[in-house]
Length: 163
Image (cartoon, rainbow, N blue to C red):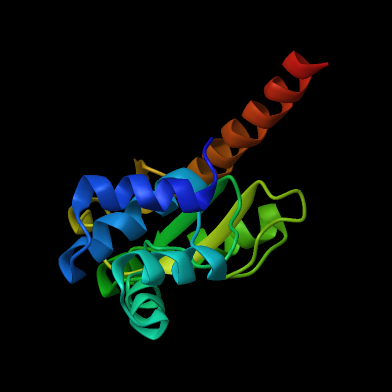
């Protein structure tokens, strides 16, 4: 993986150095680094000749641009009225109980982060959540336990393969 300043230069070469290039460059950094550090936002501002406050303002406006270190698996639970009416609160309580974290927190092992997000576009199959890029719909507490157990087992399998 290249250093973040080289990554930013290559993204700017690809997308350009205009104000309109800011969002694709922010997305590219998040894709590679998993979040936007303060350093990366300053470097983007420098590369695009923009005020750092404008880069930070853009980064913090969009909910899918993380600006703090997150877990390997980012759980985004839909908080729309449709999901709420179909049991989103039970899903949230199940996740919090299982992972021992609250909204906005990351598990001590760095595996999971839990966030609320606005509409995921699956109201017809509510409640819904996104784990990284994987969508899960028509959730029940039992289904959530099964899904999260699968992610936890992935970690254990990876650890066994390393040893």
